[in-house]
Length: 403
Image (cartoon, rainbow, N blue to C red; front, side):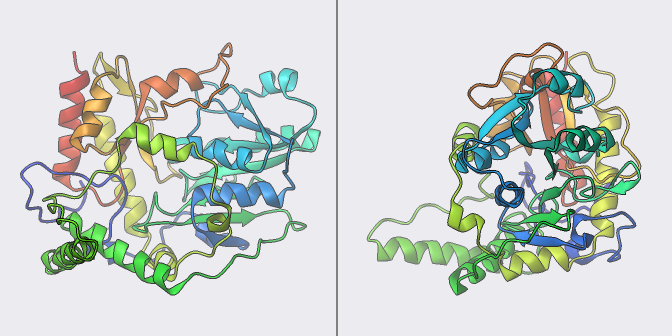
């Protein structure tokens, strides 16, 4: 079972992503598993979405070029393509989440410039066939490791198969922003990123501490840090001549799902995508021990796997955790996900779903991507979930979807 921090809340509001706490510094530096951060030609970016945009630029994608994308996707995978003026063509995936290469062989436009292939849920996908298919057609392979910071795909480390690979730091480390761009082709050049302003540096460091304190992970400092941020909010309202808003007892679970998705479906901020990562986010992502991250995620996944088996209304999408992986989330297939999913989000359960298809995604024979977007819930299993929070997640799943 995972670490159990002291919590003052009767009903836990589990963090959706890792948060800073004293436990962050426990364990060995080495995770005994490859990481994108060990890649010899990696560069830190402001986000995974920015890394995708930079990857597309690195392989020469521009206006009117065709980029192949999976039907099962987060909107942040599509927005960079459209921001560059390129065209997104969606391809089906099979029941294991792999690209349907047979379909692509028949239907992919001959003018396709790049293909994005994804390691879903942090469970590495086989990439050798994707690599061979792209090589035979002169298509650049962008290996999407946003869910897979650690692990191996076949004989190689994740991130080693694509011409370019990308990853997301916020999904694995308690950082408010951050991504990775990794180059495997020797002819590709790393982009030149603009420096970070001092105020952005300070804000990033403050955000790291605030999120940790909001979830009671910084024992001895939680009240002090929350008090400082409450005072800052009060002063800001007074300066603006507005009444102070009440300070919530628990951390804000974030915007409603529809607002969050609308933001993700917007075109990307190009200057932000070409800005360097803040020092605080870089430090917390590259300097903290990794062993605990890998071990706790695997342990939490196994806990959910055992707790959520054998029910008629839902079942684990993947029945076995691969040995060379550190999962991002636990994918749960739910027979009737609505309205239970929205209730979970309203309660602050750390769950997400890629339920907003980008306009124009086709219905294709043999594709599981579109059904997954409705039926597959992504439950948090990160290293900063406590025993009580994991048990609470399981309780809500059983209550809302059990039969």
